[in-house]
Image 1: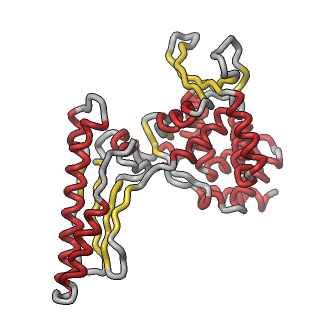
Image 2 (image 1 turned 135 degrees about the horizontal axis):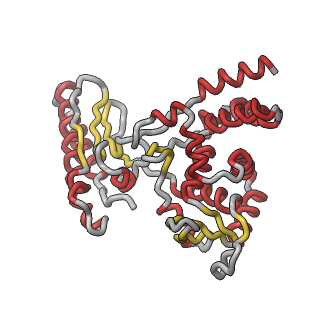
Length: 332
């Protein structure tokens, strides 16, 4: 849930008033200074407002949460545009970055004003419904029949939260998936793996289909709470905890027949969603029966993935993988 920071109209009023009342009388330099001052003041108010909203947004907020938000003032107003930003500090928990609506990157809220530009204030938001659709494909297509009585209304189960993240990573990073496909081709000589890797680059998926993901302590990670809330509220998925045979606590996700029927109908009626159907089938084929820990260990073997700092975006490997593909095709 995003923090209730709603100050966009205030910014438009402040900067708009300056433009209408004084632009004819002030020099361009002084106008730019006025814009910079208004935008900088707006970011200060936004940071303080975000901090004030924390007690109403989080239950029992920790002391560090009250120190999480920072802002930058406009330092240069010599050009045609000024900008300032509000952000959750890099040293703070990822929870704060998601609370601000900025799932990717550290700049969560920015304001701009320049010649020929409308006053603007925008907050980046994760596309939770798109994420929910992708996760639903993973859970439904990767599930198996419930081995016991289960829960009424749910007849399939997907086991392991870390496996969800590992599969989701390959869904979101076609270049890493292509790299794994090339490795499988070299190990098995199965041309289907090579064809799939080539198709990924022919369709420019590393640029068009990549959805950045953060590197957390144990690898690629994104909180699933909001997504699972969307799916649970619609009776599609039911998350629950379980205790493994080794006595450890784990997670599993019960899937309802309604979820499977919904995906079948969507794929039949909306042809663009066929990409999700085909891609999750390919990812599940590549993953096989391996669990989340094994899959993440495999993904850590990619230097770009492993070397990414905690809380930074995992970078693309498209250039390297494309060169690898071209080398293999030349030899094939």
